[in-house]
Image 1 (spheres, rainbow, N blue to C red):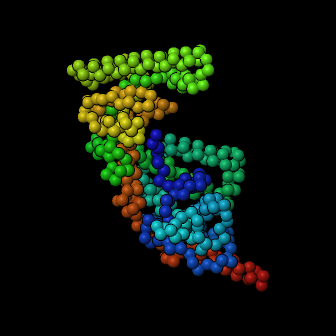
Image 2 (cartoon, one colour):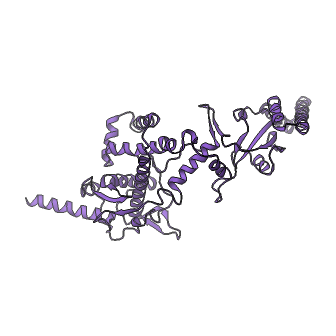
Image 3 (tube, one colour):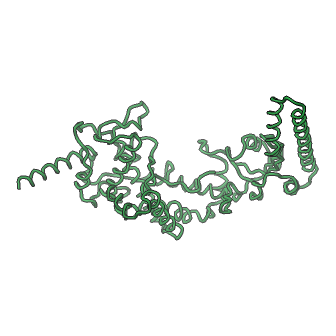
Length: 437
């Protein structure tokens, strides 16, 4: 199934070790392009405590659409991606100018640890602030479902990652130079995006999206991100049941190793039963086609025949037909449906079944995915609205691509190498002064 709720970036607050980006050539905003740290000496050690203390936590390092991003936020993300890379490579980062084995550019050149960590940290914070600010400006607030999801996530993280020990969770946040308030904020933005942002902008289950926009989505993406939708009614006639398939397989195995007449007879009986079943199934298919050929109202007749003959109960929730695109059903069925005109039908043979397929006009509220665990039908309108929502945020002209960002005064040449080196030097000076005193 498709994911019903797609997060815009890594769930940093949930401790998931997942990269937010697939590449690291530059951040999405030109002012933050990172070319790598090259001035550091190999002997330098990384003193995170000293680096964190080098600036006040509330110091604004850069701006996104006028919103200041603080050292507290940035340092937490620096810690997070440092831990991610160390986890993936199984090694400790001791120099920002060493190369990271996880990412290369189009020419196969490796990026430095400093470039990868800083770029990912900045990009994630850009995304979160942009989405938060736009949703807040649209009047989005956290409802009960969103708040419940945040609390459930917090409980899950403490239970699964810290054996239910809340104090250990707080110790972890301290070790990552993160406050509980900041950790909660990341989760709140995720919840705003996944719940109330969508409902506010597009209505519950996308109900506010126009039929015109839904049908534009159904036509498929010109870049091939998703294919054309078709709406189909189907009648499944299984060519053999699972039990019959097992009997046939057992009989074939017996035939290969038969050493007596009894085994041979069992093989012949199974073969005869299979042939008889095939004859009955062929007769059912012929009867369905004959009834459809003679019908004045093909659509109504198809529904009657479905009730009489269909053997695939999974299709029952899709009243009016199942709306699918490539990959949702057997490719033979999808490709056949593309060739059919409205209310035209054909027989498609797939492994284990003959399927009578009829194409019907697309209904914007047709079912695409039925969640049997909750009894929820996700419709074409719902998926179209989520695609529009994704384009609004992540599209070529979306919120993120259109954002303006700039370094705060005094941080135009910001790099991890410089910060850690200056912090280490300041720490040494303070130590020397203390010794002198």
